[in-house]
Each structure stands twice: as C-alpha cells, then as structure tokens.
Image 1 (cartoon, rainbow, N blue to C red):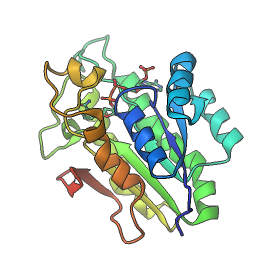
Image 2 (image 1 turned 60 degrees about the vertical axis):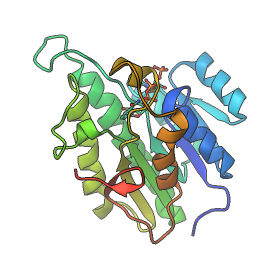
Image 3 (image 1 turned 90 degrees about the vertical axis):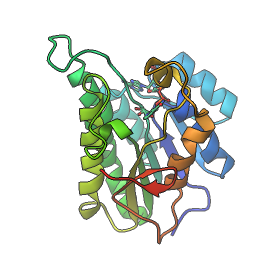
Length: 225
Ligand SMILES: NC(=O)c1ccc[n+]([C@@H]2O[C@H](COP(=O)([O-])OP(=O)(O)OC[C@H]3O[C@@H](n4cnc5c(N)ncnc54)[C@H](OP(=O)(O)O)[C@@H]3O)[C@@H](O)[C@H]2O)c1
C-alpha cells in the first residue's frame, strides 16, 4: 500500500528537470532527498525547496553506497541525472564510459541497493528519465553516446519488472525538449518549461496500484521503444 508521505530520492536534483521533479513531489506530500554531486549547489537547492540533501556523484559509487546505507532506502527513486556529450562514439575522447556510468550503471546500482527496502515495504516506484533519442523507433538520435545510453536505460526499464519485488513499478519517460542547460545545448529554443518537463516523471512517481509498469511515456502517454 502506498505510504501517506512516500520518501523519494531524485538524482541530479540541484537544477533543471530534477529540481522541478523534487519540487513537484514535495508539493504532493513526499519527503524528498535531493541528490547532487556538487555539495554547495545541492545544499542551496535543498534549502530553497526545504528538503533533504545527499551528496551523490553517480560516477563515484562510494558516494551513493554511503547514502543508501545511511538512509536504508526510499519509496520512490527518480533516476534523473544525465549528461549530453557531443563527441563522436568513434573518437578516442568519446564520453561513452561516462554516459553509461551516469545513465545506466548507477541507476541499476541504485535500484539494486534499494531493492531490499522495496521488498520489505511491498510498494515502490522507479522513474527513469530517458529521451526520444533513446528510442529505436525514433532513430536513436542525438550526439555521441547519449542515445545509446538512454536506449540501454530503456532496456533496463523493459526488462526489470520480472525481477522487481511485487508492488514496485518501473517506467521510463521522455520529458520533451525542456529549457535547461542540457536542453539549450541541444538547440536554441527549447519550448518546454522545467515544470512541464517534470509533469510525466512526477505522474509516474506516484502511479496508483493499477498503473503501468515496464513502459516508456511522453506527455503521460505510451511511446514506442
Ligand atoms: N532538457 C531536455 O530537453 C531533455 C530532453 C530529454 C531528456 N532529458 C533528460 O532529463 C534529465 C534531466 O535533464 P536536464 O535537462 O534537467 O539537464 P541538466 O539541466 O543538464 O541537469 C542535469 C543534472 O544531472 C546532474 N549530473 C550530471 N552528471 C552527474 C553525476 N555524475 N552525478 C550526479 N549528478 C550528475 C547535473 O549535476 P551538475 O549540476 O553537478 O552538473 C544536473 O543536476 C536527464 O536525464 C536528461 O537526459 C532532458
């Protein structure tokens, strides 16, 4: 059964869509921990939102192992943090390893670390921030390793329901083209606000028990992988 005030961890919560997701979950009564790799930025954002802060660098497993051990677990995990490089996959300077660490390995580690908690509670929600560029159906667009990493994140989303404890739902979403540092690095005029970008992930984070799992969504509607 859904807790009255679910606890939630939002990675990359210091700015952009992650910060808006955190704000939206707080407004809905969740007890949010805002994860950020820069302690000063994370603390400032958490103070502004009046929520908890945890230093999490997804390229430093010790940082998130420590947080998960100290906290014991979260009802809701929002794997929001992402990086968008612009270097060819074939370049020796490719950001492939970093992209996979931040957007695939670390999200899976966090899910593994949190699974004993979900098993004990019988309720949980996982939201993976993906992208249309991670969709095979839409051509795996975008520069460098980004689309490949998001496609792998989508694959995890599709495959994990068979292993997750009962009561735990996992879904991916494309927030749309949102006016953030990343959104602006992809073009000059992202049309969506961070609040609009946070709508679908916020909805997935609090899905009712008869809601979907193992899906990929945009504007609260299913999209092709
Ligand atoms: N904006 C869009 O149009 C768009 C479209 C499709 C999908 N998305 C996805 O939506 C999510 C949020 O994107 P955004 O637009 O809000 O991007 P953003 O403004 O660039 O924010 C990215 C966040 O990820 C964090 N991050 C990066 N590397 C990290 C690491 N190693 N450890 C912990 N945190 C790390 C950043 O922290 P720092 O501040 O320390 O760098 C920042 O908080 C991403 O997964 C992105 O791929 C965005």
